[in-house]
Length: 388
Ligand SMILES: [Mg+2]
Image 1: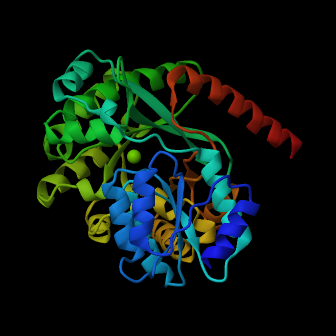
Image 2: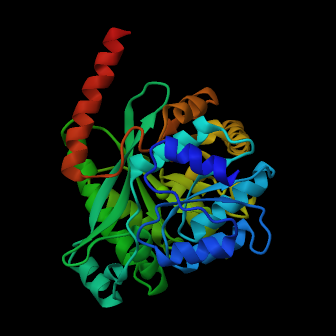
């Protein structure tokens, strides 16, 4: 298998292939040439050190290499390994079974080449809380917008507002880093307030220009503990000239507070005031169904991990299908996140999902870029209709 794979990879134009017959040997080779290795292909079942141990070690070395696993194991076990790999900051490109499927391997290599090597998270992204605090107070953090597209009409119907931070010296700071710091050090409410006020003003401006969009904003568990949230939010939204019906409050299910009576009180009153309530990253938490039963959600947002590459993954498909059918039975809106390929769009469309977000349509964009994109998108959607 090792020899065949090496041969096939060279045929596919891979410049250098390094082979190792045992995991510890591979690890030594990788550690010694950490800057040269882009991609690791490994069996899952190996003597001495299995594939999962190897992933852990690669993660510990801080190597952000791409990984392809070879295994005949059951798809759910493989899905668990994928998740684990992502937690170790590795880029799991997929799984190959035996005998080797050349086309599948080729596709994985192509996807790796397309997206390029992920920049290692070096010391440059070390951020201090006081810097972040200053950036929030100075309103330096930007809002980027990711379009939400209606599947049936193909029209742009809304945006999700996402926080972005371009540090003057350190460059672009990963959102999960600074949002994490905000959550840890009690700054998340300030962050939400900033994103909300900037995005409300922007969406109102787009509305004046004739672009009517809903605005989704991510709320943290902290914000959802404040009993006066419905009142303050309504006042802020109305002051901006928009109505609560235009706003979707997104909350990650795993972040939902434990104190259910307070949460329920807040959520129900938000709903009463006309806000949309979206359960974000659906499927990743543990108490999803209970939350769905309790809280009057208006939208279910399926996590990208069940959408991305779903057309090739039976487990993702099953979860996707049941999530969409659940949303339909509850008569709430269903959104699929992470649509990056035509096949996956087709799948979620066939399953009856209402709307989608993802790189296939557009990545999150700064204001100006979004405005231009929306114009072009509207024009091409119109041409598409005229052609039809
Ligand atoms: Mg969200």
